[in-house]
Each structure stands twice: as structure tokens, then as C-alpha cells.
Image 1 (cartoon, rainbow, N blue to C red):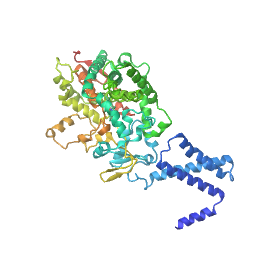
Image 2 (spheres, rainbow, N blue to C red):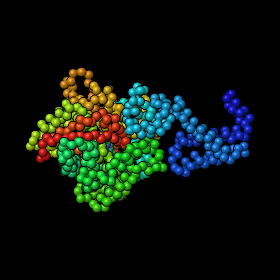
Image 3 (tube, helix red, strand yellow):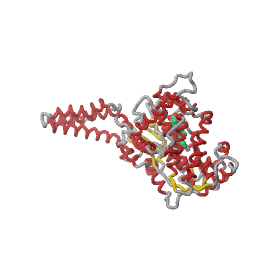
Length: 555
Ligand code: HEM
């Protein structure tokens, strides 16, 4: 009461300059109040609150100050108050996320995570925060939490879990025409996913298999054509991945393995993914800037449109996405189908290639596992059997273990996929997460947590997957929590391409180790790969050189 009467006394005693500054401060506080409730995301609204209001307020000062000084002081006081008020609120105990630990820089602004993203090591940084604060929940943004506890996977990502967070809004330019992965609305997502599910069912996959066989044969022949020489494995595999996905999705493509990439298209896509990943931290920027991914998007869309107009030559993925398989259903618009093309290319090519390259890297660093896998392949595929024939893959437990272990250590989405608590908020255990909080289960931390995988959670040890099936075969403390293994995500937004991806990864590894021996050149320091591998929109795998020698000719 006393402070209120003090305030009144001050106000009454104020001169006109004091009153003017007081009004500017109150206006800035009001803008913060609005900012906390509404997204100020259109040019006219931004112009109003951030330019027009302080400009109009400067007129209150013109009776005491020159016009230019009035503008200067009005903007200075307005912005200082606004930023001060926002910062104080975000750091204060009244902020809804105040109870969760995190570095001050990240609590203050999403720019903090944006800056970490530039290093490509956001995944390692977030894991280090969980360790530093010894907490399963850390605050990684003013309004974002990261979770490390495997028990949160189901409530956050499961069937009754949360909708997608705003991270990918910026990439879609907030448009109503989005690829499947970017839909936040459960209903729209479920409708759009139906065609994808048909395009990835077992009969569709068997249509794609001859294409895969042809491309795998081609890539191994390419490798062996340069036996004894040092070659860039990741680049060749990337060419393979893009050639396969173009055939599988559009029925044809630019033939990177044959022609190389003289136009630098793939380097542009990979660079664009890095730039685009930064928009994850500041999605609202998508209202104002177009990323380089946007231009690659247009190229991919043009290819999809040409394919749809041409009609199917084979039953490729767009055969299903464009409902050519079900002519009785109303066909989706050309734009709605074409928008999927960049998702097909990027998710369909990069993720399996990253998995193959990380598995091979890890095998080459672990000669015992390398030999064990090669022995298993030789056992199932003796000389007279063809490893391109997938019939034995389901029985090859060590192959399965190698692929799982590579995906455990290097999942495609190292930092997981963002969700939002929406209007209702979320109760997890005894903690309440307030409405409109962005949350992510941090895949990299969960999959390397010793409470889920023990011993040696950071070590490539495929045998753990065999021991899990027969725990009596291991003497000592052992933990293997498969519900903490989520490389393909979990719940309604999980990876629709999982079966195709696993078939592709297994076929390449099987045929490669069947026909060739492969190792790093002596001059190469494999630790360099660990330093350079990072995170963009997905796993950004570093290149490494290999030397191959031939074991046997093809069938
Ligand atoms: C090792 C290979 C792969 C891994 C680790 C992987 C991982 C993932 C993950 C983690 C998600 C969830 C994304 C999110 O929640 O935001 C996802 C979604 C998706 N993936 Fe994959 N993926 C792989 C291969 C593929 C392939 C070959 C395709 C086929 C073209 C594909 C198509 C998709 C699509 C369309 C989605 C969106 C699903 C939806 O939102 O309903 N992925 N993938």
C-alpha cells in the first residue's frame, strides 16, 4: 500500500519529461504482455509494435527535446524496457519453466541454441547439459525442455502423446501445403500418412526390391573397380543413396554414380540442410527468410510434377502418393503431392546412407565385430548363394545387432523430434509441463544412458543385442532397455520408411562384406570422423577414406 502511494507521489511530482518516459516504459511493458500471449508474426503487426509505437511515443518528448533526440530516447527507453522485461521474466521464478535447470544464455533467448547449432554439435551439448545439471529434464530455450528419461517417450511421443512442435514451421514457411513430416495437426497428418503407408507396405517394397538390387550391385562394382586405391566411401554411398531413392520414388533420376555430380547438386542439398536446421531454433524466421532448401525444394517439386504428368512407368512411390494405385479415391492436388518430394529425397536418401556409413566406420574400428559379421555373412551366403537375395536377412542376428548398435550410437535425429504440450500442458509422473512448451526426448542422450544400455554405453558393442536375447551368456551387470531405442522415433509420427531403410542398409553391408574387404588407409586418423560428424537437419556424417580389396567376384 505504502509503495503504491509512493508511486502516486512520484507521478504527481513528475515533470512532463518524466511523465513521457513513464508512458514509454508502460507501453513497452504492455508490448511484452501482448508478446507473451500472441505470436507477433506478421509484418504489419511487427511494424506496429516495434516501429510505429516507439515512433508515436517520441512525440511525447518533442516539447522538451529536439526531434532526433526524441526518436533516440523513445526507441532506447522502449527497447531497453522491453528487452529488460522479457529477460527478467524468462529468468524469474514466476516463469512457468523456472523449476527446470539450464544455462542462463539458453533461458534468455532461442539465439543460444541457434548459436550452438552453428557448431554442428548441438547433440553433444544438450547431453552435456543433462550431465552437468544431473537432471533428466533441462531447459534448452526460453520455452523448450529436453528430456533424457526413457519413461517419458510414451507420454510425449506415443499414441496419446503430443503434437509436433513449432520447429519445422519455419521450414514450411508456415504454409498449409506441407510434407508429411511437418504436419502439426494430428488429423491432417494421419490423412496424409495413409498414402505413404500404402507406398511402404510389403507389396510396394517388393516392387522396389529389383531397383535396390540393381543399385547395390552398381555401387559395389564401382567400389571394386577402384580396388587398391584410396577412395571417398561416404561420397560414393551418397551417390548410391540418391540414385536409389530417385528410382524408387520417381522411376528415374540424375544417375550420380554414373555421371558424378558436376552441378554440385548434392553438396548444395547438404549445405541447405545445415542452413535449414538453424531455422529449427528460430522457426519464426521462416516468415521472413527463405532458406536454400527452398530452392532445392522447387527443383524436387518440379521433378515430382514431371513424374506425375508423365504417369507411372513402374510402381514407384509417387504411384501411391498420387493415388494412382487407387483411382477411385479423389486424387490429391499436384502441389500437395509434389511437396513430398524433398522429404522423399532428403529423408529417404540421407538417413540410410548415414546409417550404412556409420555402421561401416564402427566395424572398421572394431576388427572383432567386423570379422564376426563377415563370418555370419559367409555362413548364410556360401559361394553358391547370392547375398542380394534377402531371404536370410531375418535370421542373421549379428547383422541385426550391428545395424541396431550403429543406429543406437548415431541415430538420424540425434536431438530427437520436437513436440508441443499444446493448450492443455502435460502431466509426466509428478511433473506438470505447462501449455505451449516445446519438448523433445533427446535421442542421443537416451540411447547412450547407462541406465538403458550397460556396460559401455558409448562403445560400439553389437554383442549387447545378442546378450539381451540370452542374458545367461554374459557374466556381470548388464542392462538393455529396448524401449529406450528410438532411432526411427516412436508413435504416430514414427518413420514410415523403416522397413525399406533396414532392407537397404542390410543389403549394402551384406554384399559389401561378402565381396570385399575394406579398411581405412594407413595415413587416415579415424578420430577425425568423430570430430567432424555433426548434426544438421539430420545426422551430418563426415567423409572418410577407404581402401577395398576383392574377396570374390559377383554372382
Ligand atoms: C536409417 C534410416 C532412417 C532413419 C534412422 C529414419 C528416422 C526417422 C525419424 C526419427 C523420423 C521421425 C521424424 C520426426 O518425428 O520428426 C522419420 C520420419 C520419416 N521418415 Fe525416416 N528414417 C530413415 C529412413 C527413411 C526412408 C528410407 C524413408 C523413405 C523414403 C523415410 C521416410 C520418412 C518419412 C516420410 C517420415 C515422416 C513420417 C511422419 O511424419 O509420419 N525414412 N524417419
